[in-house]
Image (cartoon, rainbow, N blue to C red; front, top):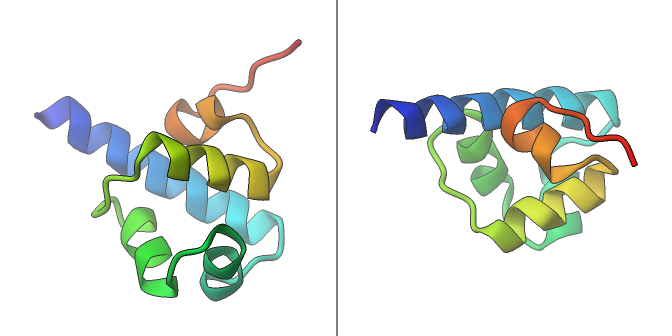
Length: 77
């Protein structure tokens, strides 16, 4: 269980940093992917458990690999 919490925390930290880097507010990113600001806030605090589809939507909106959101790893083609 501790590993799952760590991944959630890292995901939230990565999401928050990328969102800010890309110039999105929590509200604007939420609108872009079809969720509320409070949901984005929960994810960023490591309190949410996003579905695979949501991870992919967030990655697309932020123009980043889903692996980077999850693990901080950038993949090259």
